[in-house]
Length: 443
Image (cartoon, rainbow, N blue to C red; front, side, top):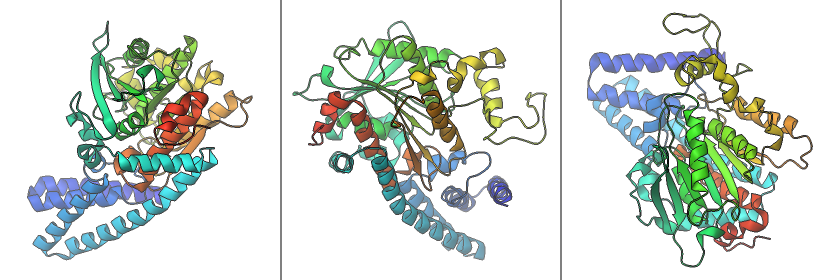
C-alpha cells in the first residue's frame, strides 16, 4: 500500500504540472508550488526521487514559508474549496515538519554522543556556530553561495579563495579562517568533492557550503575541487590531481597536517574512490565524511527504483534494471560497461584500510535510498573486522530527504556541529586547533 500511495502522489504532481501548462495562469503556478511544497514535506518518499523544483524552491525552510504564503494568496484569490483544502493540508504539513525537526535535533545530538563525541564539545561547536553563522545569502539557500566573492571576509573571519590547478583545466575553492595567531601549517585539511549526479553543480553552488563555512570557522582549511563531468574516469582523475596539487599549496602540507576527505551524494561516491586512491599512494587520511552517498551506483542489491518493462531502443533499458545503474552506465560511463570495476568502491581490495567514516543520511531520501548508507557501513564492518571498538558513525536524520543541508532546520545545525566535533576527535592530538577555536580542551 505505501508503494501505491507513492506512485499516486507522483501522479498527482504530474497532473498539477499538466494543469499549469494547460491553463497558463499565475494562480495555477502558485498552486503548483504549493503542491510541490506539501509533497516535499510529506513524510512519504516518492518512487523516482524528490521533485527537482521542490528540492530547490520549497525544501529550505525560508523558501518553504514563502511557498506557503503564496498558497495563501492563491486560496484567497480563487476562493475555491480546492484551494482552501490545499491551504489546510499545507498548514498541517508545515506544523508537523516543525515539530518533527525539533525532535529530530535531539535525536541527531544523541547519535553523535553514542558515537563517542563528548556532549560538551558538541554543544560548544553549536554555540560557536550561533556566534558566527553563515552569511545571509547562504542561510537563505546554500546554493546561493555562488554569490560569495573571493577574498570577502565572511562571519567568523572565513575567506574563500579560488586557485587554478596547475596542469589541468580545473580549480579549487579554499575556505579558510584568516587569523594572525595560527599559521596555516597548523590547521587540519578537509578535501571535499561536491555532488550533482556526476553531471552538475560546482564547488561554490551545491548543498554543502554551509558545512564548509562551519569547518573553516572552526580552524579547518576546506578545499573544494572542480572536476570534469564528460566521461568517466575524468571525475576521479581530476579529483586526484586536485588533491595532490592542494597538498603542495603554501602552508598546506600533508606531512604536517591531518587530512580528511568528504563528499555528498555523487560526491560521496567519488570521495570513497579518492580515499582509496590516497591509501594506494601512501597518503594518510584520518577520516571520511559522506553525506547521503551514492556509494554503489551499480545498485547490486536492487535498492533503487526500477521499471517492470524494458525499452532497448533508444534508451537501452533492460527490464527491471535499476534506474540508477542504467543512468550511471548510459550517462556517466557512456555505455562502456568494462569501466564498472573502476567505479565500485565497495568491491575495492583496499577497503580493509578505509579510515574511520561518518555517514549522514535523510530517512526519507528517495534520490539515494538510505539503504545505500546502511550497506556501505556493513561492508566497512565486514572488511575491517579487526577494528574495535567501531570507529564509524551513522547519523540518520528523521523527516529529511536528499540534500539534507538545504533544510536549514535545527537538526541540520546540530548535524553541522557534530561533523566539526567528530572530525576534531579523529585528529586526536592534532585536533587542538579545531577544538580550541571553541574554547574547548582537546583532552
